[in-house]
Image (cartoon, rainbow, N blue to C red; front, side, top):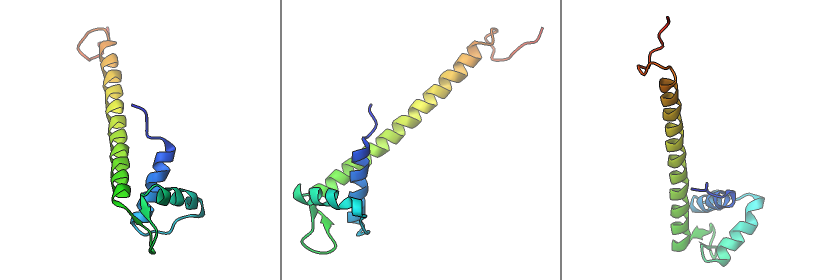
Length: 101
């Protein structure tokens, strides 16, 4: 599974700021206009608001970020388990205990 692209993360951040009526930065102007042009944001009133499509896109991106985070945790757990198993198997006596002779 490929991680979520940075541009999607930036898009999610702008969508969340618009939804929370938080101030946008100067770099967000172009993204905001693209969101308006694509019907994801309604800016006929101040503050601008997400349309239902904008809300759905925001939810979708949030789910993707959460899924990516969970996948990363699972991979880390598996790698840790593999390392532990390799250490256990590598001691030579199969008991998990190193025996001095």
